[in-house]
Length: 285
Image (tube, rainbow, N blue to C red; front, side, top):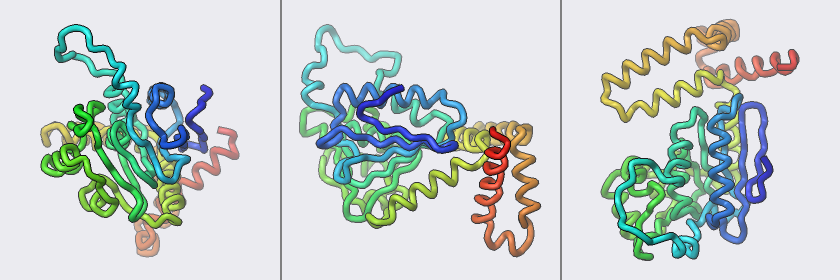
């Protein structure tokens, strides 16, 4: 597909998407359509393990949904709860549930619908003294209607979510990291390398393991016994994949379970999968 407001690049199992809707990456209807279509496409994309979202604007990741468009929303008829998710909720749930790892590299401001979008992703990384979250809906007479009232309490706790949503203040980067909204904070000159390295690292791992590990982690919302049963089931599924015995054999041959190998197990874990990718490329896979 051709994108006007997204720049999409794929390298092996990693897709990087750069959002570019000047001047503030407002979620206009055009950007919303492209994001929704992109997320739907990626949910079914084979051979992709990681999706990294970035912004072309160093000051804004995504501002919020276009308020002028919200003013045009239809108001006819009596309001009743709807049994199915609306389109924005569906996009956010696809991000949360798709069997790809989703990462937000938030170097500037994010808020409103943008805050809800990144809250649906698996990991969020920010820049010290620059990344800011602001949920500005309540002062406009509305509420975060794109999943914010449900996701924020699950990420940072009920009391802090009330502070963020009802206070509508800028929440600084250090606070966001301390509250668990951001995984980590980096200096402006290091975030690009750090996040890219993590994204590429995960993208090289056996795809079934990445997919089912995320599925199992999402099962933490189940009662514990059910989650453990599912974990055991998914573990057994992975043992039966083509990739698992090959990766474990490479691990042992590369020095796993030796003192030298275990002292550098993080590097070894990457090396055995880099070598696998190199072999596949030589074969033309």
